[in-house]
Image 1 (cartoon, rainbow, N blue to C red):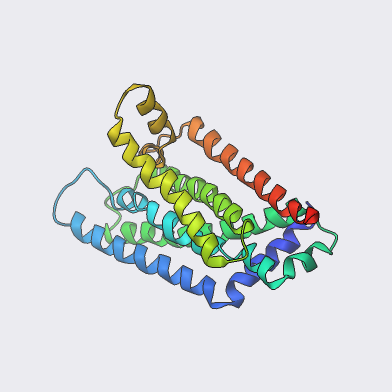
Image 2 (cartoon, rainbow, N blue to C red):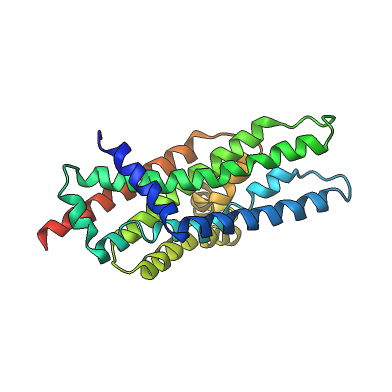
Length: 247
């Protein structure tokens, strides 16, 4: 793991050495900024049980569906297409170090995007004149939720990128799996609101998990689910990268 910091710097430099990192960042900030403005305007019409940050966190599905495939599609697919992966592997690094560094690079970029939305909290505090106390507990747990779910989907996107040399194919595979785990799973919770199947679908629904986290409820079970899922995805990705030696 001693080579991970060096590889991580390489990955972060790669994002901002091309236009991709800036395009993804601008897309995220524009969409979330417009959403924040609309939400604040809506809330100013009268009292409501919702808060601006709670509604903003409920939009977590959009970055998961769009941003995650965009920042993960090139990670291994482009390296394989350009032949630089083989060159990288001639260095004294392990397959897992390469995979883990690419994963950390994507998670770091994703976390930076959401960290910039922290200015919204300062804006809300400023324009409330300090008369309205912000409940920081649900805000912190909301950020925990978007990062926790996002890093899991990033691991899936990295796995998809390891299976092809085509970035578009990697993005489509990542989008399809995230759509299945996110949107389809949410539909299933409505189709099966109760019973054994309903309990399973609710336990796996990211929307249900975010609903609890937005209210400041931190359950250990979603943490275990997403972290173990991430570990499994990284393990499979490492095995896919190692399989090149047998071709």
